[in-house]
Amino acid sequence: MDPIVEVKDLTKKFGDFTAVDKISFSVGKGEIFGFLGPNGAGKSTTIKILCGIMMPTSGEGRVSGYDIITQQNEIKNVIGYMSQRFSLYEDLTIRENLEFFGSIYGLEGRTIRDGIKKVAALAGIEKRRDDLVRNLPAGIKQRLALGAAILHDPPILFLDEPTSGVDPLMRRNFWEIIYRFSEEGRTIFVTTHYMDEAEHCNRIALIISGEIIALDSPDALKKDFPYRVYSIATKDFIGAFKKIRGLDFVIEAAIFGSDIHILCEGGSRIRKRIDSFFRESGFHPYRINAVMPSLEDVFVSSARRFNL
Ligand SMILES: Nc1ncnc2c1ncn2[C@@H]1O[C@H](COP(=O)(O)OP(=O)(O)OP(=O)(O)O)[C@@H](O)[C@H]1O
Ligand SMILES: [Mg+2]
Image: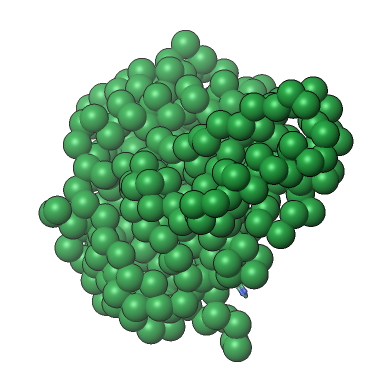
C-alpha cells in the first residue's frame, strides 16, 4: 500500500479531556477510507488535524507527504475539505459560489472556467448553475459544497459527515459522485455515523471515545465478528421477542420487519438453547436461520464492549 495519510499515536486534548487518544493508521492512495463512530467520538477533531486546521497535542502524521505539525499550509493547498457545517453564500448563484471558492485556491481565467464546468458536470448541478443557492434543496447544496471542495483537483478529499440530514436517495446519489471522483485515482477520507455509508468504504476504522477499536474492510469486520446472529420467524413475534431478550445468552435482540434478530455468544450449543426455548415456551411454529452480521451488529456490539 502506497500511503497518502500516515498517522502515529495522534492525540488531541482539550484541557483534561482527551478527544483523540493515541490513534495510528494509514490510508492508501486511491482508497475510500471511512471513520465510523457515534457523536463525540473524535471524528471531526481527527479530520481537522489531518487538514492542517488544528494542532494535535502529541503524535505525528503526514498527509500527501507533508507534516501535519510543521507544514499545515502546504497541506491546505493539496487537499479538498468539506466540513460538517459547510457554508455557502446563499445570496450568490451556484456559479458565483464556485468562482468564489476557486479564487480562494488561486484559480483564475481558463483554469477556473474549466474547473467549474468539470465539477458542475460531476456533481450534476450544471442545469441550475444560475440559481441562487438560497432557493436550492439541501441535496443540491450538498453537491455544490462537494464541487467547491474539489475545484482545485486535490489528490485527497476529506468529507466530514457529508450526507447528514439528507434522505437515503440523495445519499446514494451523493455516493455515486464520490465513486466517480474516486475512479479518477483520488483518495477519499470520510466520516459518518451511517452504516450504509460505511459499507461504501474500502476500509473503515471504528472510533469510539477517541480510540480506534477496529479497522478493516466491512466484509472482514463482519467475518471476524465474535458473535452469532440469528433470525427467527414465528407468528407471535412480539411475544417471543419480549421473552427472548431477557435470556442470559442473548446479548442483543431487535425486531426486523416481522422477524426477530438476536445476537448471541459464539458457542456451539447456542442453536440448541434457542430451540429448547421455543419448544418449551410454546411459540409454534418457528424457524431459526443463522445470518451474516450487519455492520450495525459489529458496531453495536463493539460499542457495548466499550461500555457505551
Ligand atoms: N474546541 C473544543 N473544545 C473542547 N472540546 C471539544 C472541542 N472540539 C471538540 N471537543 C470535544 O471533543 C469530543 C470529540 O468531538 P468531535 O467533534 O471530534 O466528535 P465527532 O466524532 O465529530 O462527533 P459528531 O458525530 O457529533 O460530529 C467531543 O466530546 C467534543 O465535545
Ligand atoms: Mg463531527
